[in-house]
Length: 361
Image 1: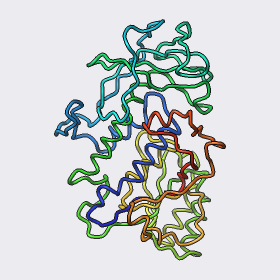
Image 2: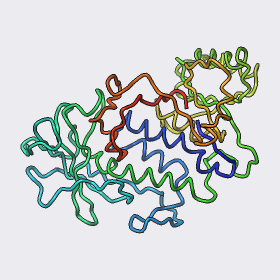
Image 3: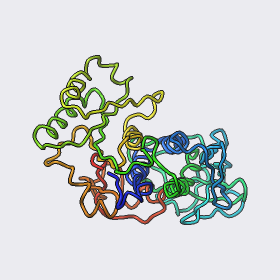
Image 4: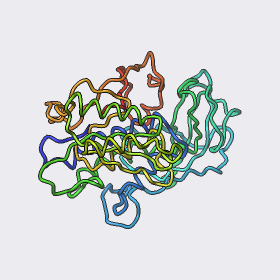
């Protein structure tokens, strides 16, 4: 949920939820080759400006804001210890660098700082086994400095996540790319794609993403909001036409409800199959026509009219409200604990608290 303290500051605060969501889902459902961040930053209105990696300033250009990250998937890593010093990537690095992958460096004792085991090194394109420790070695192609990133213990990632060291250049640049995205929101004239820049009053509404299995839940939630709780906030329902075509007629109840109650808009996620699954939440929030968004998973059932949330002191002051999830470091389905790669990705210390609920923003 994103908003503003005063309408004059909307351009900074309107993207708070969207930025947080990007960081969250990029880590939770990590895709090889950094696909989520690449699609988001390069395909969502960032063309037209570029950052100078040396000076950190912005210049008008037809080049996308964030240049393509070199993955060097076919690069075969040297076996054995590399020549020269391999350093830790500086904390709070603010430059987008041109990195290339060198390879996976295996270590012992289930620690990335354990004794080197060069006989178990891997090239950049090989999947990293889930139960080994070590780190990915990358090189700055301009300065030729080498760094260790994506440092892993024997149990750093959740089941089902696939990682290669070809992901490491994107991983290392993520913190700088996130800072660029934040900086853009502070530029004069910034606005999200479907927001009216000169509107006198910020628009507010509820955003949902549905697919065939969630149509019944979305229908029940909207009926609850309208008929029981008296909520008059407009609703955007985002959906993939390709998904809906697989179940002809499944959308009919929601269409009928929209005609009956009004103030419901149906928006297509039609980008050649992207985004998919959880990425569609990011897409919907970013492309919503509402400046202040309450995002609800379609299977969430409010217990009172949520309209008041936009007037709470917390929202007015901070521009966003988040709620804790059920999961915490001692009981986590996403492996958010002290050893998680999340903290390295975001360049921040481990925080021992409940995870953030992503179905209510």
